[in-house]
Image (cartoon, rainbow, N blue to C red; front, side):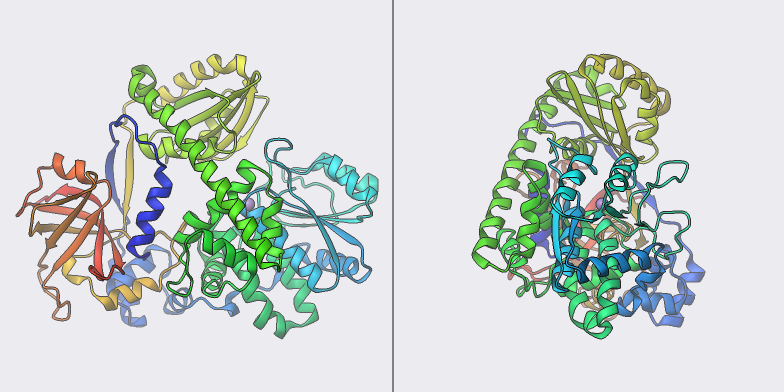
Length: 611
Ligand SMILES: [Mn+2]
């Protein structure tokens, strides 16, 4: 549960500055997690958990008391042995040799949070052990994603004999051949899925748990976590105790930021990395982290950093470097010991993030106006929206914003000098990569997965792309209204909300992908007063609900304060007044505001009471 302040600020950040014509908001449909009452009751009894906590655990596939204990108490002992990963022994041997012989090692990253933090982890490791590390992070606009042969050639000429890729490399077949021809040893560390056929580039070692022959238990590590495992393997060979006690906790900070930012599921080892890393971030010791916290308005001493803070405050600032400029300064930020230099670099990230937000807001205003005014476009089931010279660093974010507003899959395309660069995001039930594959002949290149794609094509082919995708999407989506699905995890009458329960729910954190913050439903709650409107868009409610068997300890008599962001229009449409009865979907919040401090609920959906 994030305190209210962080949530509200995150929303401001997420929605940008500009407000343009109101769009018709898509309908919200509530879907309920399938209940398993018998298993939940058994787990609650065996593990002495509140029933609703047991329900939430069972819904996550955790039904045994020992599994529940491990989930509720993430611990360094739950980290897997790195040597279980295919190729780890060979990779660690070669890296150790490079360090011992003072060979410069080239680390080849990616420009996002995952890639840059992965470089930081390995660079720090190599330097701690007395070796020499260089790095290259491609320029997003000039070089694009992935390994480049020219960089390998330059590195060889400058004396490197070992290259380690991080967060990239699984598709670098030609570049791996270049490395081989030059006599450069190549270690690929990457988490991206393989292309069909399971062929892998030729390399000294490939660390990727998604290789079919790799039996490493955690398949969904992010790139930085794989780099962490390599660092762990090399460091533990030197001094296992020191590594476990001193080095890993600080490395987990970086790995946790990447794990949360890269949106891998926060289960299994990822949950351990995220939980322990967030715990360690309570003391952001390095100059870079302290400077970044300061510009992001985070004070770890005042309030523990949450996964929400990482996703909405730290990650956008780190990513701004790669989106708007070059990402290499992120690596300098996280490796410098110079406090003043760190502050300069953090200030630059802050400025770039401001530019990113302004760029995004301006383009989004254009898009929203177009959706409001172009009736034909607004009717499309798959939105294809193009503009001249939109910044390519933000088209993916723009596509996400369009999906949030419309509940429709969307492609956002920037046209520059005759080339259309696109990025797309989708909704449940419409695999976007399949849609692109249906027009494969039109693209110069394309890739991605069901929910997110990227592509290029000649601008002259755009009308044909739009024509074909319109037919494709109409065939598949006709007859269903676009709607946001709200997943509801458990029923919890308002008079069951207690500080004890809130404490248990906190043990389910960190929340994020694969471990959603619980959304509860309460039925037939009564408005004690009419809704109070805040800033014309938000509401505050006083609610009461008496369940059949009130809990004597609740103390509130079932009366709770509720806040609903952007729900003023919904409340007006339902004609809510004092005495109205509603069903509400909500999350529990701990408001740390001095006047309101206490538990309250954040409403995420309202329906008229069914009974
Ligand atoms: Mn990644």
